[in-house]
Length: 120
Image (tube, rainbow, N blue to C red; front, top):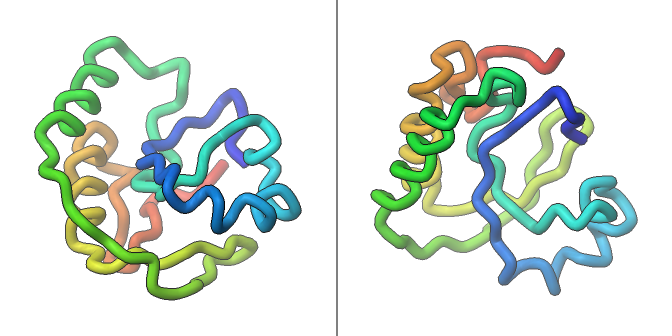
C-alpha cells in the first residue's frame, strides 16, 4: 500500500466496486481507508513533497483531454505480491500511462506495464 511518501496515478472504476468489494476488504489494506476500486496507471509517481500545482494541473489537462473509451476486465493477472484484473483493450490505458509519465521519465512503464523505477 502506498504510504505518505508515495503517490500514483489511478483511474477510479466505481462500477466494479460491487464485484470486488468483499475481496478488497479481505486482501487490500487501501480498501479500509476508502480508496476506491481503480486501475493504476503509474506507480510510483512523483513523491508527494515534489508535486507542484503545475504537475497536478498537467495531470488534470491529460484527464480532460482523454476521450472516453469502453473496456472490459477480462482476466486475473499477477505482479509479485499483487493480483489485478486485466483491462482490454489495453491501448487506451497505455496511452494514458505514457502521457502521465512524461512528468517523470524514470517512472515510465516498460513494455510489460511495470515502472522502470523500482519501489523504494
